[in-house]
Image 1 (cartoon, rainbow, N blue to C red):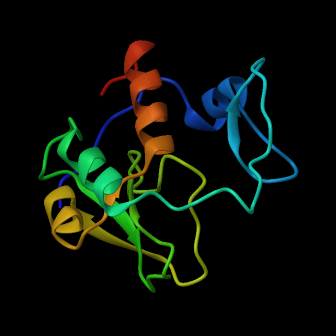
Image 2: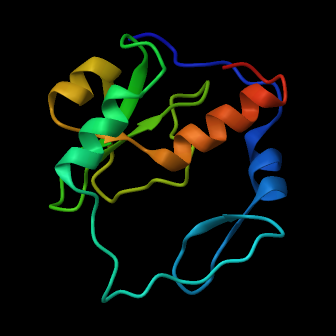
Length: 131
């Protein structure tokens, strides 16, 4: 499988400098922004239409390596971008591990892009750290 991207800044330093994680709900937030935890009674998973829209708008190459959860939970619908060590860009973890696929293989299995990974990748590209 192909390596997804190369990075300029060290993500172990860049991510904490850019993002905070809410201690109550785990939502990543941009530092210095306002944040309100989602109400568990009103938060819904994205619709299939929304996931299809995200997939259609994914600007990155179909042949790049992405990661999905090996034991798919009912709420698992995202594939994750990889760093130079084939680790997820975002703090995605699972007890069962992550499976490597090409982006098109993940999309064919009805996974959609992880929006947090895309934000990190775009932020890195904006700072000159690659795509």
